[in-house]
Length: 83
Image (cartoon, rainbow, N blue to C red; front, side):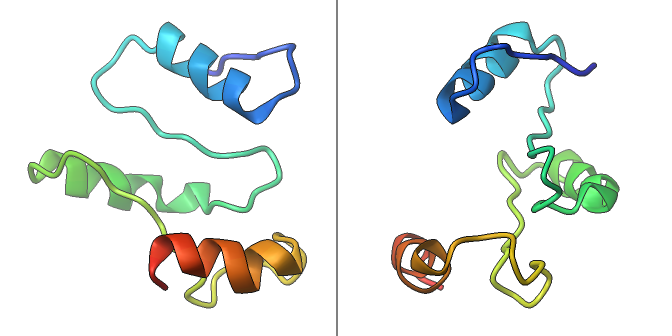
């Protein structure tokens, strides 16, 4: 299921998606393709093994060159993710 949210603020989209979710597994990502949707089967496989949460690391060389502002790429994201 794809849910559309008219209010263009990042948090609104997550809140709407969680509210509308009808299954036990939720896959999140943006329309800008900064997260590799082709890896969805891998994520689901890990969840089905019993993990509660699966996340992809965009700093491991898979991120497109312009997918993240420099401030986030070199300061914010590494700082908050211990990358």
